[in-house]
Structures are given as C-alpha cells and as structure tokens.
Amino acid sequence: MFSFIKYLQGLKERFQRNKGLWFTTITVVSIIGIILTIYLITTMTSNVSEKVYQSMAKEYKLKVTNLLDAKQEEFKKIALVISMNDNLLQQIETNKLEDIISFETQLNEQFLKQSINNYKVSIYSLGSNQAILRSSVISVIKSKNTIYGIEVMSDGVYNTYLQPLIKDDNVYGVLEVKESIHNYKKDFSKINDEYVFLLDKKMLSQISLETKNGKYKNMINDYVVEQSFYDTKFTSSIREIDKELFKSMTRNDYLIDGIYYRTYKTINDINGAEIGMVMLGEFIDKEDGFVNLADNMTKTVTTVALGLVISIMLFMF
Image 1 (tube, rainbow, N blue to C red):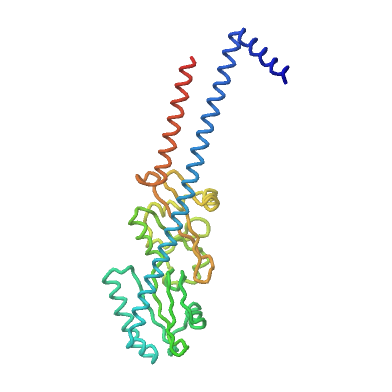
Image 2 (cartoon, one colour):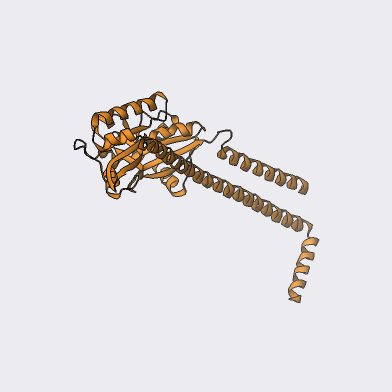
C-alpha cells in the first residue's frame, strides 16, 4: 500500500514537471467531468418530467373516476325522489302504461328545458308484456339490487343507474336514470381539458342501424368515434397518431406528440367487458398546464447548468 502511494506521488511529480502534459491532463479530466455533469443534470430533469407526465395520467384517470362517482350520487338522488311519488308507484304496480309514459315524457322534457345534463328517465313495469327487457334490467329484477355503469344500447352509449322497485320482497318495476357518455365532454371543456370517447368497433353491432348510420367515423386501430359529438382538433388529430406511438401511449400511460399531451382510461361496461376508451389531454402550450410547467422547469435547469459550465470553461482558459 505504501509503495502504491509513493508511485502515485512520483507520477504526480513527473506530470507537474511536464507542464504541457499536466495542463492537457487537467483540461481533459475537467471537460470529461463537465460533460458527465451535464449528462447527469439532463437525465435528472428528464426523469422528473417523466414522473410529472405519469402523475398527470393518474390525475386525468382520477378525474374520470370522480366524475362517474359524482354522477352515481346524482342519479341515486333522482331515483330516490321518483320513488317517493306514491301515485306513480301505484301506476307502475298496476301497470298503467299511459300514465307511466306521460310521467316519463313530462320529466324528461323538464330536464331538457332546464338543461339538466341531458338526463333521461325510463320506467319499466313488470306487468307489461309489450317491452323486451335488456339483460341489465333483467339482472336488477333477479338480484333485487341496484346496478350502475356504462352500457352500449341500441341508441348509443350511456352511463346508467338502475334501481328496483320492491314490495313484499317482490320486484314490480325498475327505475332507470341515464346520460350519454359523450355528455362528459362538457365537464372537461369547462377546465380547458380534452375528452373523447372512443368505442371499440366490435360494440357497433349492439347499436341500431338508424343510430349509427353515417355517424361513426373510423379512428386509430379498432376504435371509432361518434363524430357529431366531437368536432375538435384534438379528436381529428387522433387519426394521425402513428400506431407505434399509440402502442407507446398504452404502454407508458401517456403520449406527447408535439401539440398535445394525451393519456387514456379504459372503459368497461356494466358487466365488466371492455367497450372502448376515453382519451384525455391538453395542449402542451396550455399556460397553466403541467406539461408547460415541466418543460419550463427543464429548460431553466438546463440553461443554468450550461451557464455554469461555460463560466468554468472561461475561468480555466
């Protein structure tokens, strides 16, 4: 060990005697150190940006989840108010279809007039043999439990709340409160965020020809969009996403394509089957957006680091 230390001391003395070699060595080592420092700073800021973007993806997914949870509570309140109408319950129990239809029509017209989120109420009386009940309504009748979730129906895709009406432990009717899933675009537009629901092509078979005729447009991969609801640049640009970039988004939970930050949330129906996705995002230049903040932070740190490096180099020479 002692001999090794003496060797290093001797090597240092030889370098110092050869001034040219000594300064060349110091310069090379310094430049390597500076390059390594820049690399470390760039890597660190890149990692921070990555974490910010992933955090944004979680935040967007949480917004959708919170919105759906809030809607469930709203639907529950509407169903509760309806179920307190004793006269209506009597009409449902005795299967007075004209009175039931009249109540539905008046209530839905009121929702429309008051611009209450395009809610639509339907009432199913088990005494009626005229209507063919879909599987979710039958499930409510059999289980005697409330069901809530997304459904693909013949007239579109809806967020649906189904509540059984029970008397003497027997179900005599079902209340339904629903809202188009496309309507939630308005909630995101209010906060300057983008929202597009993309339906899996395989689900189109459940939508009537009259409803889907000419209204659905092919997007990326096996997804389509009901174009009458979405006329934004964000929507039209989805078709331009490269398939590899789309795979990158589904793998990493986000995608930045030069104009938009995008993320997504898979949408499952009331039975747990995957029916499509909601694509969410914002302009990367959005003034108070996280992408803009993260980008500015990265540029600031990199600029400071480069300034420090240039100062050191000028001091050396």
